[in-house]
Length: 90
Image: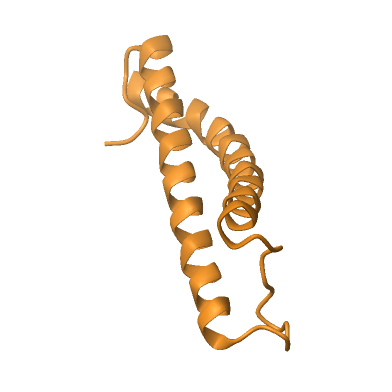
């Protein structure tokens, strides 16, 4: 039963952590792109940017989002285990 309680308690935290991860990953992507490319990140419908630059930006953004979301989710799950004694997911 305590594992189910742990999972139920983790769900709201997971949603909040996911929103934080999305916000943080957007900021990190913008920073990384501007530091490496010396310009603002392109948008998919930016007609002044080529396919290569658009796809590179999308791939980089996807990698950053996945890494930050996984890091935050893992840290949240670890925190739940420390607090409840149970891992939130089987």
